[in-house]
Structure formats: structure tokens, C-alpha cells
Length: 377
Image (cartoon, rainbow, N blue to C red; front, top):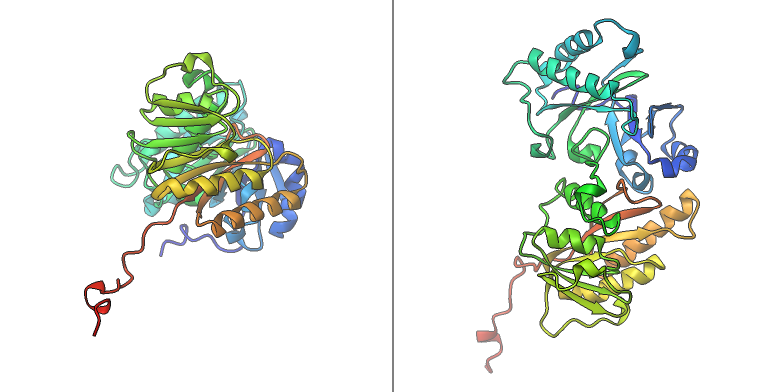
């Protein structure tokens, strides 16, 4: 077994926690039982958890957007160092070529910076490192063409230096260094930021399963003003959008759209209707939103998808947020929905995106032989 691919218990980890949860970091570090915590760049922290598995396990994991074992760290000041790219690329080739990662990706410790210096440096480092790796060892694979379960060499670069590790995209919680792909609102529906949010959610979903096919029928709860609706329609989906408030005028008579003006709690689909997926971005108490989803999930096809925004209005502490998550996921499980995964997306702010799957019929159980057992003897 490759020793790099299996981090030792004492290994340091680079984790990303969204800026909106910065006040929660001390509580999360205590829950991880990490003896130290060092902040790097923007939203990144170096920790040494007592149990590394806790990084992707509840209740801590809901706050950790991305994580990486640090197999190679080079604390330095790249901007003031001559030959940084060549020295760093040579070190990466020496240390990681034998591990044969599926590809090499370089991201920024401060992706929000308007300074283009490190963006250019990251591109140059990746290009030079790929030249030094044997061509058969590390292909220049596109980010979203990665195998979610195969190890990737991720590198994060910034004022504090270079920090690298091997991890699969699924285990790291994102195809890209740092998490999901940032989707500009200008490239999606401009009705609201929600359009970019559902686009990012569908991208993230590929870590665990393929999104519904283009012909799928979505039931969207809490659709107004229509940012998510517009994004789904642009992907070729059919959408039944439910909300008491109207949709944006630009969606009037949009092909594939059926708008239902009313409360999701009282909505009744036409008899025999089945949906491939349910999308819930409703405001209000999270348990009430989940109750509406569970009632309507009976109209999901077997194995159907639920994307659920967990709103945390009125919840401020780490413990209360974790209790809310546990309560809603327990509620969903009792209603027959299996939690597939969860994450914090770029556009989530103080909320989380949860992915559930409807049950699939179990064909492995023996069926009663009605042709004989029901006959009188």
C-alpha cells in the first residue's frame, strides 16, 4: 500500500471553513481535539485532529467544506523567492511521481484576492510539474473528468507557501482545490443568486452520482422568484414550480414549466404524477420544510433525488446547528429518505445543502407464490 495514500494519525490537515462560520472555528477545533490550529490565506486552517475520520463525520463535517492531508508543506514567501516554480515543481516530482496520482491541481489559499500574481504562479507551477512527472504517471486530466474515488495531487499556494497532499475528490469533498467550482452569477440566470447555487449543487453531486438526465421532471418547492427554476429549465429539465409568490415575468410561458401558485404544504400533485427529483429552497422552519418534502416524496420515482436547503435562521451556535442537522436528517430517514451527502456551497451563506435519495424497490426478497399458496387445498 502506498504510504502517502494512507495518512498517519499524526498527519496535519488543511481544512476549509467558510468565512461566515469563522466564529465557529474555536468550537470545531475543540470537537476535533486538535492541539493546534493555524490559519492560512482565506478560510483555510491547518489542524491535527485526534481522529482524522472526524473531518468527514458528523457533527463536525457539516462545517468543513474541504479537507486535505498535508503530505508536503513548504512554508515560504514565493513572491520574494527566485526560482520558486522550478524548485517547487522538482520537489513535487521527486515526492509524488511514484504515487501516480490521477492528476495534479493547484489552487489558491486566497481565491477571493484580486491580485493575479498567485493565479499565474499556480498555473505555471502546474504546467512545469506536469512536464517533470512521467507522462504515463500524471495525465493533464480536466478537473471534472476525474474519478471521484481515485487520488489526486492537490496543491494550495499563497503568501504562506505551498501545501500539498494526495486525496480523492470525494474524500476531499470537491473536484477542485478548495471545494466546488465557483459559478459566476453572470453565467447563469440573473433572476437571483439561487440559479448559481443549484448549478453548483448539481456540479457537486457528481462526486456521488450523476445528476438526473436532461428529460427529468423536477418538483421545486419555494420557487419564487425563479432563479433555480430558470437554471433547471436551461438544462432541459421540466419543472413544476410551487410558491405562493409569483415567478419572475421573464419565465412567463417558459417551455417545460408549470407554475402552481400556492403553499407547498397544501400542494397536491395530479393523480399518478411522478417526479425524478425534488428541489426545496423554502424559507421557514427546517422541520416544516422537510415535512412538506416527505409528504411529496411519495411521488418520487425509485432512487429519485432530493436537494434540500437546510435554513438555519434563528440558530447561532455550533451545537444548535449540529442539533438541527441531526433532527432534520433523522426526520428524513424516518420518512424513507437516505442522506447521500451534505456540503456548504459558495452561495449558501448561513445554510447548507443536503442531498437525499428515495428508496429503491428491493427485488432480492422472495415473492410469495400466489399461484399456489392462495389456492384452496
